[in-house]
Each structure stands twice: as C-alpha cells, then as structure tokens.
Image (cartoon, rainbow over all chains, first blue to last red; front, side, top):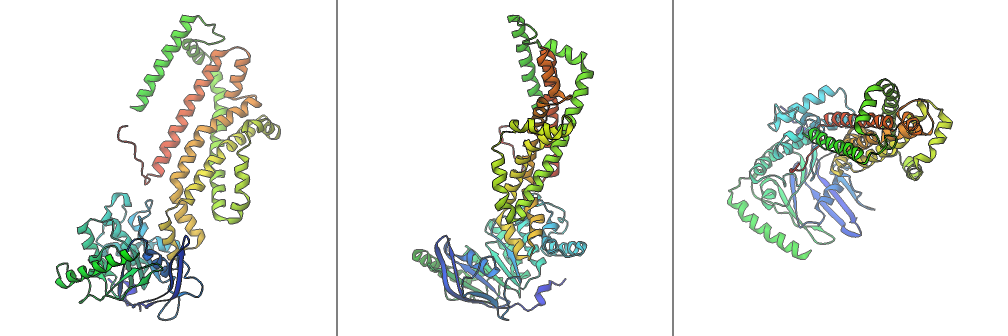
Length: 255
Length: 251
C-alpha cells in the first residue's frame, strides 16, 4: 500500500518576520524560522509561550502580521498544503470512524464519495483499525480515537503535517506505541509537532527546538543522534532528556 | 418506573381532591369531584373527541412549521452576516411583545379557522427553536472549524457538514421546549376566537358553569401534551443517538 504524499516532495517551511499578538500580549515579533522538508521538528516550551500559536500561523489559521509570511522552500504559501491534527477532542461524534477519516473529501466536495470511503478504509487499516470502520468515536478508546485522527491526517495526503500535542491525553504505553506508528507513517513529510513531553520529542523528532521568552524565540536546534523513532532505552536519548529538561526549566524561569 | 411513580402521585392527588369535595360539600359548578369529571369524560367522549381532533391538528401543524421556520431562520442567521446585523436585533425585540396581545390581531388577519391557531403556535415556539439552534451552531468546537479550514472547506460546506450536525443536540433542546409550548399557542388562539377546538370548548363550558366539562377538556389536553412530549423526546433521542446523554447517578 502506498501512502500518497510520501512520494510527493515535502517542502521546507520558511517563516519570515512573523508577528502574532494575542489579547494585547505580543507572543512573537520578527520571528524567523525554518523547518527542514521531509523531517520532523518538535517544539517544546513552557505553557502559554506560543507554541500552538506558531502552529496555527503555519497552518494559515492565524495571520502572520504585516510584512510576515509563511512559505514553502518553493516560494508558494504553506497554507492549503497542511494536514492538521489539533489539541482538542479530534473526532466528530456523529460520524463513524470512516466518516471522520474521509471528512476532508466531503468538505471539499470530492466525488464520488465511494472512492473516498474506500481510501478511508485503507488508511484505517494502516493504523490497525480494520473492522472498526463503522464505529462511532464513543465506541472507541482514547488511543483508537487518536489512531482515527492519524488516519484522517494520512487521508489528507498533504506534504506538511502539523500536530498539536496529539498524544497528551493518552496513557503512557499507548502513547509510546502511537509515537512510533506516527513517526513511521509520517516519514518523509515535513512535520512540526508541539509537545510537552521531552522524551516524545527526542524519540520522534529529527530536530528539537525549545521555545522561550516573550516575545518568544526559537532556541538552537538540538539534533538527537540516529533516526527516529529512537529506542526508549537508548542511553543517548536519556542523556539528552536530562539536558532538555534543564533547558526547559531555564526557559520557564525566563518567562 | 418513572411512569409508575407519576401515576401514583397523580392518583394520590385525585383522592385528595375527591376527599376535599366530599368534606366541604363544594357545589359541582365551582369544583366538581373527580368522579363527576370522569363521568363527563365517558358520557361526552364524542364531543370531546370532535374538539380534540381540531386542537391536535393545530398543535401538530404549528409544531412542525414552527420548528422548520425556526431552524431555517437560525441557518440564515448563521450563513449571512447581513442577516445577523439587521435581523437579529429585530428578532430579539419581537420577543418582548406578549403573544397574548397579538392573538386578537391574528384572528382578525387569519380568520376563525385553523390558520390563526397554527400561526399562533408558530409564533410561540419559533424563537426557542431558532435561538437554541443558532447558539448551538455558534458554539461548535473550534478545533473542528480549524480542521475544516485546513481542509480547504468552503464556508457553506463547513456550515452544513460541521456546524449543523454539531448543533443538533441544541436544536433538539429547542424542539423539546417547543413541544411543551405549542399547545399553549393553539389554546390561546382558540380562546380569542374560534368555533371549534378544546380551548373553545373550555371557554364555552366555563360560561355555562359546566366545570366538569372544562376539567374533562383540560385532562384530554394534558394527556395529549404529555404524549406529544414523550414522542418528540423519544424520536430526538433516537435520531441523535451519538450525543452524550448522562443522567445523574442517583436517578
């Protein structure tokens, strides 16, 4: 089975002089950043520093301010090439798992729907939910719901994937399993993942940034050795976790 | 179980009522004993049925059209900024007018027949449906709207595929309230000007001191009201089965 966007070229995300204020507070100003194409960048930082806002900015859900822009390395805007995996309860309770995965096709008016439904079932199979296509979210566990959300993200077949704490509500073991699956299934796409969990960032990020300050800036890239998903008991990962936690504590004191 | 408990309470009240009438010797043209009401109910069932049929039809039509027009109005408000800015204030101000006050006008405009009562019912329930549905659509989970935007959805499809289904539980609340109030609209309409219907029958009975008949009509109306609510409630629950419906544990 081929995950379509994998073959497609995934652009870098280039942010130039972006400015975003929220309720009078300037979250960031003159922010420049670049996230490498086909790689997974993880954003860490204290609550309220503006991680989610940055993600919204990249997705085109918030304006980048006067003079700011968010483009791909090819110069075209990123908005419209993004699959979004939000923080809150991701699934629509009135739709079946299949309906949730294929909601994008219906929202864009793609016809015939039967094609979309078939492709939705393929994506559900990829995340290990064959046989649950007709179940409503209420009949699924928290982990399964996140799998459906992941299948929906894959269904969108977009080169850029933005994830806002997608696994934060899950128990530790389910989280570990899903991290690995996500890293495997989203390989070769440009992924930006916001998380509170340093270990999660170190396991599935090609590069990890700590966001801090007000207005916020993006800290220097921390590049863990090896390819994600990295093993839990990798001593290098554990050593970096200590370093990362120290960074985060400093970032919090600075805020 | 709930029905049984309601029945027990009801039976208790009837016994109390019968005792009150028997002990005080109150004349039947002021307060008839329940036994007398039951006799009337049985003996005059044909007349009651004749009038009840009309009222039931008025209520059903009023409820159906009121829900449809209320839901449509909410959709228009949601879809158009122009409507929100120009229509919403008028709509809210219109609710300050007591429905009783315009009932005679409606009879004047729409006649003594069915139409004026149906219009009355529509007016009584329209707002509760429209405001519940509109509120529900406005309170759609922001995450779903973000998702729709990143999926390049048109505003129209976002409304139809995300906001409307998300607001269905709220719409259901509005419809339940409407089911309770629709009979009030029809009865007010009949009081003001009618030649048939339970409201008309009650008014006539009152004027002729046939209070037992008035109570009998009232009982028919109450039974129908409860049946209507139970039907609407059951139907909505079945249709929107995905909505969480948690009853407190101690119930």
